[in-house]
Every structure is written in structure tokens, then in C-alpha cells.
Length: 603
Ligand SMILES: Cc1ncc(C[n+]2csc(CCOP(=O)(O)OP(=O)(O)O)c2C)c(N)n1
Ligand SMILES: CC(=O)[C@@H](O)[C@H](O)COP(=O)(O)O
Ligand SMILES: [Mg+2]
Image (cartoon, rainbow, N blue to C red; front, side, top):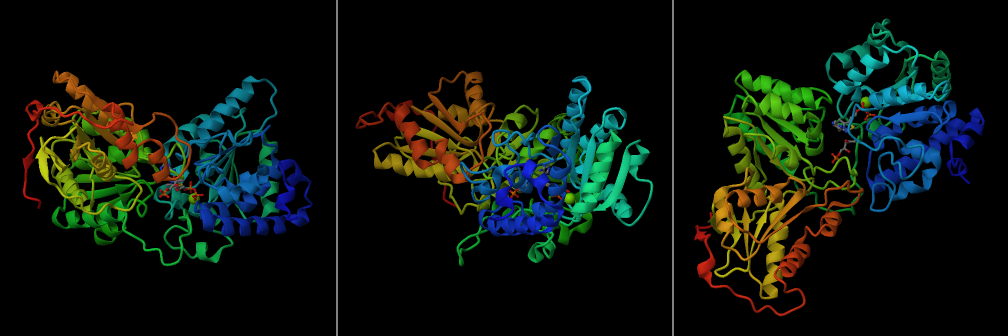
């Protein structure tokens, strides 16, 4: 039996003789490489914390002691040492082990949120709670990466933690010098100086004790430092120097991001098709060439958000602000006030934390900022805090905000140009984590919407948001096979809803909206509200994601499960028409149709 298979919890780990630890580390590392290369996941970050995690679970007694992992993407080793090594083959798959801590999986897991820079705030709260418990000897440990430390919340927490010398919090700084790319800003420089021997850290200036730098791959040295930190019984930073991808040459040699996150293995010869992100990157370079006022901003995700080509072409017009979305947005407002047109590229879910900045720093001042929201809709394998299902509900509330959703590669280019040409307020453009859709041609107009399928005597109008056009057209084909005819429309600019489209919809027996977004306050809700405001009585079904935290899974399957694929949409239409299981006899006189279909020559 392997060593790790003999560890059903930290207790067995603590009983291991020190002489077994190098073999344990090697075994864990090999299992990570073998398994995560198959399943996909955060291989680099986890390879970097093997020794650190072993030391943590030998010094502290989780779950009595609280260990919080910032972002949680580096918690695979923690899971293996807390009795879940056999979950690795099912990592991030439907019904399998989550790629982040999961309270349902183990009492050793506290924080499931994958949004960075939160660990120190949780730790501050836990320490306060334990202190109130009276004479509580439970340690509070927060493991935070150097990248996450560039996030503002960390400094809000440090401001509080440092001011309470009687409330010990052990901050384990996992410093591998990188987020995806090398950690930016003065903090990155300061940490590098500390690595280089600088004495007098920023942390000590704040009143925290500081231990380190410690070799983050020397389990003995780590254990000694962690025991010392524990004994201090005061807020302390243990500065651990690690290497992302450590022990796997292919990861350590990966210049881009040290295999920060890798995709599941694909059969040899599988063609790699361009993604929406690739398309965005190409389009932005085009725009950058003719619009010198356009600048790009990333929050430590230059490559993942497709800005690499733009950065190569226009190195002085791209800003990596660190994992600092709030700062990114308000800095963009400043850039716009200074006459630039910023394009802020973030994953949709991460814009959540900068909502106030979008609302009060950008929109209140009607600043021409464009938000490109990648990973909008279901992302799947990264679990509930990664699905981009909140942005439409949030942005729909923002006065003056205009939101576009491209259905295919051509519309991405068109809409991005329209967005950066919009000068008197903010715009947003969203697309999913998927291969970019091929051309879905326009066959007519309905209000300002593109018609993708028209019928002289349709039974239903399907209004699809962005890439959901593919599923809507598949549903139309399925319905046609059953003698039910659908008109399919793509609004392109989805928020605010176009009153002309709503008026046109008034002539249809049934209207179905389809979006890859949360149902609460999404496009469907906005469409219904626009109809009420216009006094138009619609028979409306709004198809969207259930407004709940969706467990990790595979995007396509999750959309189908939510009825957001061709068959699912068709089922909704047939059910609404009261024809499910019966032959269709209904037809209404065309005279009832208000929305005329204006055919246009297909471009
Ligand atoms: C708010 C937020 N923005 C962006 C991300 C995407 N992200 C995930 S991990 C990561 C880098 C984290 O760097 P670090 O904290 O140093 O951890 P490491 O991967 O180096 O171990 C980023 C930017 C995120 N999870 N949360
Ligand atoms: C942990 C984190 O937030 C990122 O690493 C994220 O998991 C990357 O997601 P993609 O794989 O979709 O780029
Ligand atoms: Mg790092």
C-alpha cells in the first residue's frame, strides 16, 4: 500500500516518521501529475504546496484548528491528506470531488468561494469568534498566495488583524512570485526584496510578527517555522518561498503560467478550435490599431482574458493591476475621465466584487468604459463561485449601461466595435467559456433584433441571448419536425431591452426568451418588465439558469440539465402551447401578428 493510502486523516500523517516525508511528498506529487493531467485542474499551484501542506497538517490539528485556503485552487494536497486521495480521479467532474474546498466533502474544508483575497478576512472573523469562545486554544491559519495578496480585501483584513495583538492569526504567505504571470506592483517587488534578504518587511511595519523567508519545499524548516508561529500566540506572517509547478519540469518550464490550470487530456489529433477569448483578442488588436485612445486592463489574467496579442502590439496601453478588480474598474473610470476608452477584461463572476465601482464610479459619471466579460454563463468545472451567472442581474440595474451578447464570431467583432464607439456611457459584452460559434446568418429584422429564422405563420417567437442562438435554432428545427414553427430573433444588444422588439413580440402567440444567465433579474425578467411597461400582454416563458449555486460539472451537460439546449427549449415551447404529446392543430390568423418580418438580403 502506498503511504498516502495509509493516511485517512491528519492524525495518521502526524504519526509518520519524519524519514517517510520525502517519499510521501514524491508520491503525492506523482499522483497529482498523473491524475490532474487526465482530469484537468490546477496542477501548477498544487505541485507548489506539497511540502507546505504536509507541514501544515503536521503542526496544526485540523479541523479543531482552522485552516483557510485563499482561492482554494491549491487545496488538492490538503484533500489528499484529509482522507480524499481516492477522489482525485473524479476531480472537477459531475458528482466527483470539487476542485476547491467543499464543506459537504469534509469538516476540514471551510471556504468554498474561489474568489481570491478573502482568506485573511475569514481568519479575522474566526479569530474573533474563537476569542469570544473564551480561552479557546484553536489556532487560525490562513494560507494566502502572493498574487491574492495584491487584492484589496487582504489589506483591509491586515489592518484589523495587525491591530489585535491578542488575537493570533497565522498568515502563511505562499510566495511563488506569481499569479498566472509574475506578481505585479510594488508588493511583488517588496516580496522579491525579502526573498533577496531585505530586512524590515511591510508586515512588521504594520505590527505583525514576521518569520522567514522559509524554504517552502523543506518540510522540516516549514514545520519549525509553523511551530514557532503557533507558539508566538500573536498575529504573524510566515513567509514561505515556493515554486509553482515544483518537481514537474514541464510545469516549471511553462513560461506562461507554470501550468496554473490545465485542460483535461484530449485524444491525440483532437483539433483545437478558436475560443471566444481567442476571437476577442484578435478583434481588440484590430480596434487598437485604429483607436489610439483604446487601452486594456486586466486583473492578473492577461493571457486567460485574451490580451496577450494586444499587450505585445501595444505594451504601453495595457495595464495589469493585480488581483484587484475594484481598483481596475475605478482606475478605468479615471482613464476615461482622462480621455481614454478603457476595455476592462475580466471573468464575469469576478466583476461581482466591483459592482459598486461599475455603478458609482463608471456609470454615475457616464464614463465610456467597455467591460468584456469572459466565462459568462455556465463555466462548469470550477464550481458554483465561478459560473458567470450574476452579471446580467447586476448590470441590468445600472443606469446607462448597455449590454451586448455576440452569437457568433462575426457579431463579436461588430458588437465590440459598437461598444468602443459608444461614447456616452458604459458598455459590456459577454461570452462563455467555449469554442467561438461559426456564422449564424441574419435573414431579417424584428425591431432592432436580427432574425435568424423567420416563418410566415409562426407559432412561437424565440428570443435568444448571444450564443444561445445555436440552441434556439436547434429547437426550431426540432419543432418544425413536429409541425410547430418558430421565428428566432437575436437582439445583439440585450440590455436595456429594445421596446420595438417587445412591441413586435406582442403579435406572437407565445414568446420564449433563452439566456445562459441566472433567471433572477436576467434578460427574461427585463423583457417581461418591458412588456408590462409597454402594456403589452405577452404569453411569455423565460428560460435561464436556476437561481442557485450550481455544483461543478460539464458546461454542455449542465445547460441541457437546465433545459437550455435544443430539446429543452423545444419541450418548453410544446408544453406552453399545450401540445406536448398531442398533434398540433392550432393556427392563428396572421392578422394578429403585429411584428412584421422585414426580410433583408442575407449579408
Ligand atoms: C477575484 C478573483 N480574481 C481572479 C481570480 C483568478 N485567479 C485564480 S488563482 C489566481 C492567481 C492566484 O495567485 P496566488 O494567490 O499567488 O496563488 P498561486 O496560484 O500562485 O498559488 C487568479 C488571478 C480569482 N480566483 N479571483
Ligand atoms: C482559480 C481561478 O479562478 C482560475 O484559475 C480559474 O480556475 C481559471 O479558469 P479557466 O480555466 O476557465 O481559465
Ligand atoms: Mg502565487
